Length: 73
Image 1 (cartoon, one colour):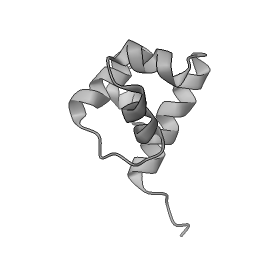
Image 2 (tube, rainbow, N blue to C red):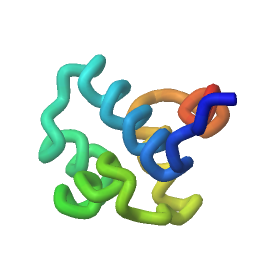
Image 3 (cartoon, helix red, strand yellow):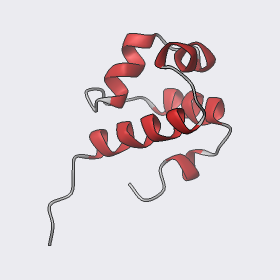
Image 4 (cartoon, rainbow, N blue to C red):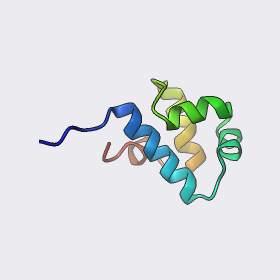
């Protein structure tokens, strides 16, 4: 069985992928989420154990549900 990447890294990669699909810079996306850009950057790099409230903010800014955001992690 292949070793799976850490959940934080998988979540961060998913956020980055969806942000880029929207054509948003980290700075513009962070503002849309109401989060600091450096915080969002650390989330995308898988360095933060992010709170569910912030997961909801990110999903809302992406225009998707939390379940869609976290699918296939």
